[in-house]
Length: 239
Image 1: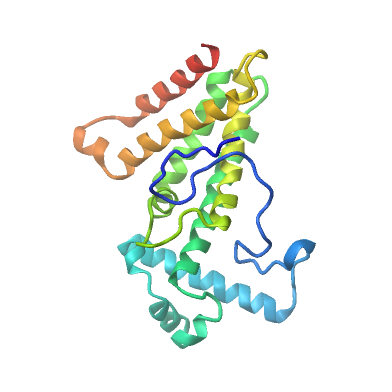
Image 2: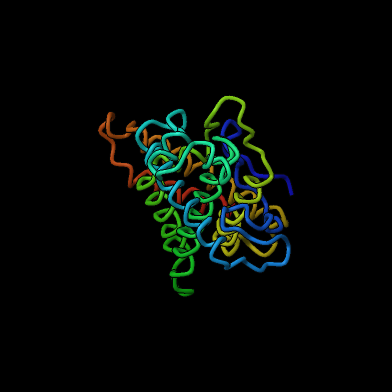
């Protein structure tokens, strides 16, 4: 299936489900393809340093965007030298990749939790509205992280790196799961992915306008706009 691409100028756009990414791509210190995590004290310490560094990086990101990321400043805050931190992240681009992968995972988790919380007996509109609400809530709460997913954070950064493409899959999988029950049984195999892509594109447009303050400056209440998007997807599913 062709990879869905709501925003070609940013990081890897969500696409069709793919095989899990390489162990350790999320910075947890996986051990290759065995699925066994190294739990030695050294590995735990390494994971702690990486987590603390990423937390500081997110603070920099929120305050000044990707251009504000500084490994030397992070190292200083951690009480280590700049070169020492490069043992944990090869460069600023590697740190950004970890942050983007984490953001994709957290967005997918929020969407998945909303879908899982929906009762099977709920009306299709309510189930889809719950997913849309979760997507919007995550983006509004984490605008600096959301922007990473759909904007090239740095000049020359590769938004189609394998780790990013793989990390984008779970969120799209949740979207496909959300719209599949809306389709008639006669729908072609590609219909769910196409409808999920339409949903994602519409949501991304609304969320981007909201987090950049466009709705506020126009005096618009965004809530009815999201509901209109839900109804448009429901209508498209039955067309």
